[in-house]
Length: 201
Image: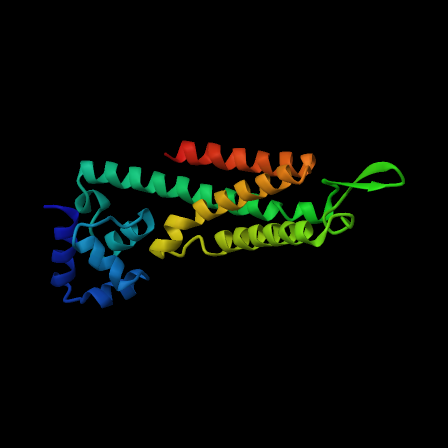
């Protein structure tokens, strides 16, 4: 008997609805429905809670093959969660451009390095995109960190892509406006993101 069948049988033996089981396990009814239809497995913590609730061992709930599948799924989710965290931190790191001297500025016949906030010799049509891109990236990084447990399908699929595109766009704009230090800094962040994505696959 597969896990989904065992869970359904145990629930019915205790005369519990999916909603009541979900409340007992502190998960959503959708999660229970997903497990019982064979479309996924609970995480380790939920599995332990199920084991305790129905007074059965984890080995009785899952076959050896299902345990391997669960371990692989858990490993992939942990890796994805780590990638999300690093992407969020890297995007928040863009805030350093506002305060550290990454930008070249001419003055008294010399070129000085200044922060984005102190940069004044560039026209508005260049400064505005600088501030918009940096601000958007930082805000998006905060959103990635804040909504790591948010499982909306569109958000899950698009967040890393959007983060990557913001970094690529930043590199292109800094390169095209001849800001080498800012370009190299953002390019390094982009490389780290790329390495993480490759490893995740």
